[in-house]
Image 1 (tube, protein in one colour):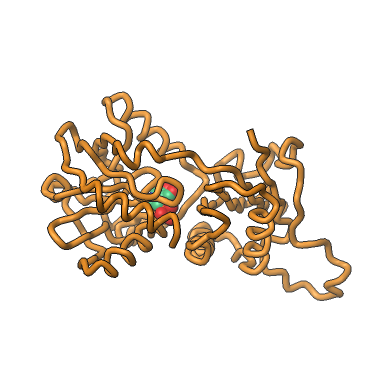
Image 2 (cartoon, protein in one colour):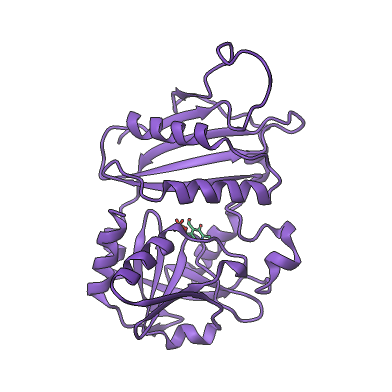
Amino acid sequence: MSVPVLILVTRPLDDESEGSTDARPAPFSQADPALPHLSVLDLGATRGDGVFETVMVAEGAAPAIDAHLDRFAASAKLLDLPEPNREVWRAAFDAAVAAHPPVELLAVKLVLTRGIEGQDAPTGWILAQPGRDFSRERVEGVRVVTLDRGYRHDVAATSPWLLQGAKTLSYAVNTAAIREAKRRGAHDVIFTSSDGFVLEAPTASVLLREGDRFTTPSAELGILPGTTQRRAFALLEELGYETGSVRLRSSELGRADALWLVSSIRRAVPVVELDGVAKAVDRELTARLNEYLGEH
Ligand code: PLP
């Protein structure tokens, strides 16, 4: 087992304080992941109050790092956290990748929490470790059930305090939904809104094919704008297909010619069964998508 690389981001925010920059401690430093670093009082641990990103690094390259840093800042803003210092996080990310022994696939997690209650000092760190191998799922696909997330499609506009569309550390609901899928004999979930629109999977975006048109649910539905979905669309457009972000009724999922779950580490996994009904799989296109997503 390889040892993860831990970088503590000691100056995670834009620091406009006066004084000599030379006297200040480095904005980040590598630390021993086997030693304790996080306080039991940290609001990230006690309340899941913080944001994160998981970035894929394949053969040393991170094609979506800018999109992840954009989403990291957008999530922080939704939580009223101060803006992360982009240059510091980018340099700390590069340092984490450089410090890890070369592997085919590295999963690099960036975390920013609200810090210790009352101290007004967010906590930041980066952890780099080998990514889970999804090669079997990419070929064999996954069985998926639809589950109602319980919010209307316009929740992001009506109730922004519910933080839909932010990548927060509170993934207890997401993992509970996956356990529910397993109880129902499936592997994964596609969430729907309480008023019947297709949303996203607990840790992935949804991609649909109808003929020569590929669509994904619009980020306006209070879901995460997926970085992998965006890269997948770039390839599909290159191949001459039409793409679009849309509002889809859950009944349209059944009508789709093919469905995929896409995310940074898993890339594109075909849905082979939806709510107990078999779905066709385009193996050639799935392989092409996965090849592209490993490189771009
Ligand atoms: N939606 C949710 C809820 C997620 O957690 C993720 C990734 O973890 C995604 C979508 C896909 O995002 P990305 O393609 O940027 O990994």
